[in-house]
Amino acid sequence: MSVKGLLSEELVMERLKDVFDPEIHMSIVELGLVYGVDVSDDGIIDVHYTLTSPGCPLGAVIDGQIQDVLIDLPGVKEVHGKLTFTPMWDPKTMASDDVKMQLGIW
Image (cartoon, rainbow, N blue to C red; front, side, top):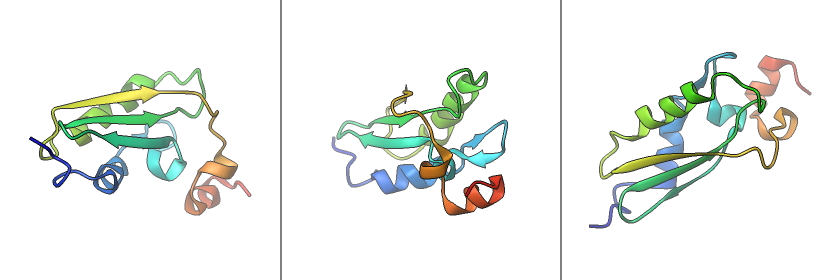
């Protein structure tokens, strides 16, 4: 059964706004840490994301939050966090203007 009618990349990204980096208390979407999402016809969501630094000790916490906010969406069977460091996160180019303002990055 196809779940494309129930799930969209926009819905997944909206839900991911509820995942916060535990150290700086900002949404991973607004920080620009989510590089993309793939929603398959059979209810599998892949979230391509990064961390603020390769040594971030809370990566597992963020991955768990991703799982928690997405697994209950209608039609979702599995959620896969796909951690990458390519490209490296750059808040100057990847974060929202609101985040840049809060972090004092310009």
